[in-house]
Length: 67
Image (cartoon, rainbow, N blue to C red; front, top):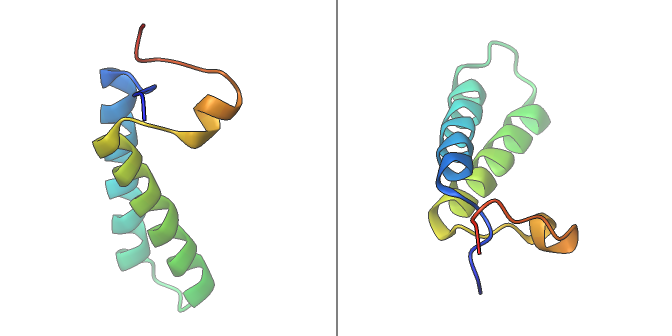
């Protein structure tokens, strides 16, 4: 699997994932589906930032990682 996410993009995804998980933990209302979705999207962002690969980037032929 060739990396298609650049370093800036990876940092942004990592921060976004952590923010989404933080929001899921600290949300005031008891809406479990929203909390679950926030955690799922947060974990996906963190995993993508760690491995440096995004399926949707490949699908749309986007590459922020250079050559």
